[in-house]
Length: 372
Image (cartoon, rainbow, N blue to C red; front, top):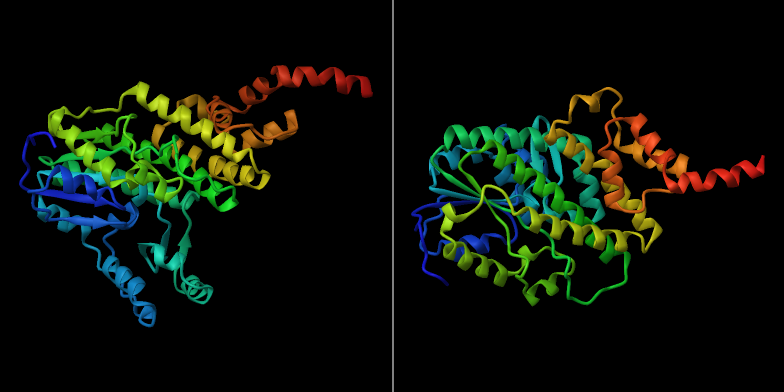
């Protein structure tokens, strides 16, 4: 590793699986006074404690995680730690589903998702599940994100914030398994990245003492293949190399306030292409991908981006795009990029006019005219 710069006495970490490898390699001699793993940001910022007596008979791993989270106090512990550096990875902590117990928000543990149906049915009777991607989910997450920005600015003004921006690898070199399970997981990873990226941008905009760390496009480790269609952040070797480059480039002060636009567009273009080809390979999978697109992503985009006034005159609902394609062109949007481009139009009138003026629709008009 290159000579370390800006040696930091205390570093805090908030993320999940296993981007903490970056902290381990970048700050090997630093004390870690605060370490928070796998807790959704909405629960992290929710200070309302809960007593979960109804889960005492549950398996120990699930019970232990929920009891720990229900005690809350994450913000106060981070404030007391007052680290010189805070490393945050949003790629997982903003996508774990939520559940409400009375007036308290908690994260759905992965172990519960893998538990048997009897335990899951019992959980449904105790908690109100708020699935990833639904409108209520993003309402809680965005409100928590804004509160997180205010908290860092107010309580940790001298703390440097490193935001890990981790795009999935479009250059997957593992064994491609032709199954719905594999392809659905692949599609999910493709769509999680732009969501995570929007949240990174939100922090960069509102937290002055923040920087973004993105893996260079040339980084690749065969370890990634062990995890199927997962993002690069699963590879310990990638994080080790990133830590070395982090110090070689000047540490925190050498990080940019925004990601390189060319790199973002290159990554995103590759992701969209891979996503589209995968989704179109199966009708059911195509339907699943559209549900993600016109459910979660546009709402999140609108919440963060504060659309111009013209969007509120006759605003396009996310479902309008799919409906317009079906009624006017007789099909659904052929790709994620097509969907998002039409969703970005100012209003329903412009959406309708765009499709009516399209070559595809105009070429159909003579056919229907002859049938009359």
